[in-house]
Length: 419
Image (cartoon, rainbow, N blue to C red; front, side, top):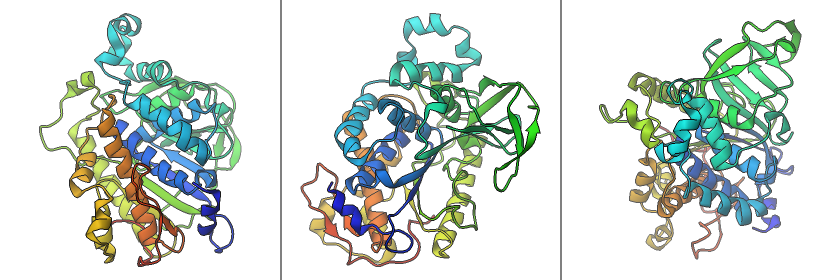
């Protein structure tokens, strides 16, 4: 992970350092492990220091909260992530359920009592703190990268966001001193409708502002329309986490390279899910919600891909489930059979995608499968579709293969597999 490797990664003028904006999707602990693999790939090239903006939903919010908390409310550097943060979170995700009967335990039923019936999102917040070590306040988050935690407001019907310096949405108004636990904000972002249910938060009566919908600049003070609101999973609004940092048809607000890590699972087959699945940590919502969420994600993915193809945005869509061979086929790239032996098989990639959306600990083998899949999807998409920007291909650290240049790849303007 030599720092010199980042010299091959160019900014918009092919000379300035590349600034990276990351969107991390929902998907329970499957998403958490996949995103860790994507971050490990960026760390392999010394690029975590280049991340200027983060926008997360559900599982993406949970794992980012764990990262920030484990580093003392700061974003880790690449070397620290590889040697300390990744192993620490690997141990966490393979040893502790976050929300299940096992995680709650006998004493938890006494402690949480009726909250398990009507306030499960607040229980999730407490378990995030006690089991995953997520602590501190949203206001204590670092200024860089600028992190947006996405939820869906039942009151306004809009994308309510938390960040270090503000909370709210353009309809309800914005408050510039958010005094809320990081665990609560992350739990709201993962509060799957009906399964976990909305998180109820008390709001201050003063300090609210009407803001410009386009610029988010404060216009004038206003009274809040309510002193208590309910927040659902950000995936109820948009599960890719793009809303805070990307608007369809428009360039990014600041120059940079947008990477959307999509660990959304496939639409469950009819009859597969049960409302009692939460007792086993499964996050299966009502089928109509799943259908709507899947359609919204598909439409947003296509919009992003169209903007990438039209060069409106420089970016990448890292879509879970595609093997290295499948990425290569889409752009007409070929490798030798021996080269493909160094990567996961199509079967392994498919199994990673099919891991259930839940909040349970996974076995070390399953964690490695999903995290490695995230690493390899990121490496193959970035180097195959944009070799002029990402010039060095890296193998999963357990692999004996050494980095190779990506000069033999083709370079279409689109940066990801399309649906």
